[in-house]
Amino acid sequence: MDLTLLLVAVTVILQVADGITTWLIIRRGVGHESNRLVRVLMDWFGLEAALFLVKGWVVVLVLGGYFLELWHGQGAQVALFVLELFYVGVVVNNMNVLHGED
Image 1 (cartoon, one colour):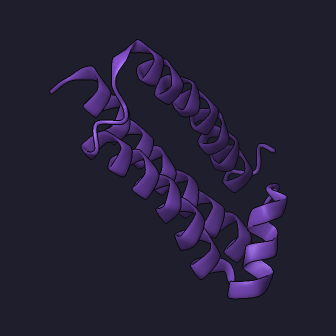
Image 2: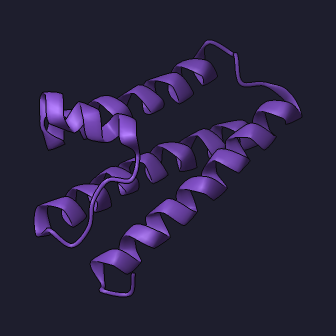
């Protein structure tokens, strides 16, 4: 497996983890969505549809970029890695909120 494919796979996993933990936080009433755009989409389409749209869009962009060979070279790998660092922080924060450590 090449490094770019590994980074794409981790990005997809983090998107799913963010979606699930965000859904749990909101359903349990222990927190809220911080992203204004996602909140607007939630108002328009509902929680599940908004999360599916946003997370699905990122997954389509990342996977599509890989399979269309748009993600190549070190620059793309660095960009994916930075995106992953951000989403690791988001998922860790979501887990802390779920466990009452906000």
